[in-house]
Length: 359
Image (cartoon, rainbow, N blue to C red; front, side, top):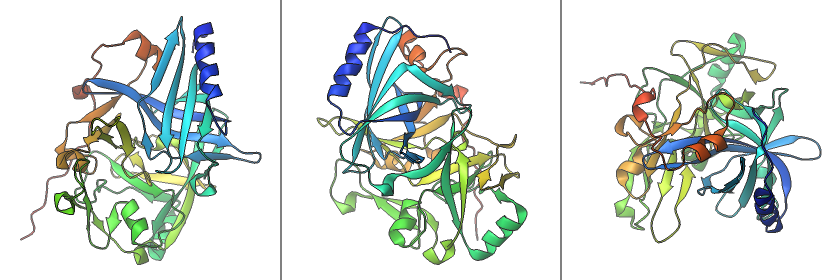
């Protein structure tokens, strides 16, 4: 990456941001630049913070559009991320603090994290930083005792062809499903990973508080009894698929984004292959597969609420930018301001197996 000139204008912007910060700590953010229909923005994957003894990672549930400033080759961006409806953090990212570019087209930056309150341990996942600057995050695969024994004997995990909704089978990718939940204890935990013993969940669009206005989403039928055996693995963060999102734009309130299934993490592999693990870590192989997009659903509509669960029924996607070698996401943003960068036809998307009719 080329050297960045320090700008007094950006120095001032950073100082102003720091003056308003509370509970300020240093951290690292993993972030992508994405392009949608008529918009571009920073998509935050996760934030890493270091305590006196270890690194931890934070998973946002909501985030707001980036506030951006640039001058003379230098730039500063701030993002508000909500870990829950009650706990917010603000992240300040300076262009010159780039650490690494990962092969999922994400970028790691040293950042500063300002928290609205002390972050509870419930929100802190375990992780460790690798020598290349990337992070391996601790995640959990919950299954039954028989399947766990087979996994441990084989030394690998097999992918699932089920889509996020658990109602259709994918043709050109399989996913190994993980969660940051330590255990699946109750129905609420099941719903948070898009499962339920009722095989359906209901979501209301933003404009309505009437239950009769909710859209029914069929999901994978499961019970807590089927998820009582667990394998914990450290997963390289760049192996994880981009999480789909909802756009909440119920004006006159400010627009914001919501991560769909923030408890769900998917590592993609080529169909018919496996993902080996050793010493508590999922291993990288040539059989990895990922798509360079995420679905964005309009939370004002039934179709938009359904879109992230069933990719087959939407063309509303966020294309992940791939800056040229030697450039980062700030360079792309500055150099292409107000230009149309959304080209969904150039992105490989999920394909689905033909539906099987049961007579």
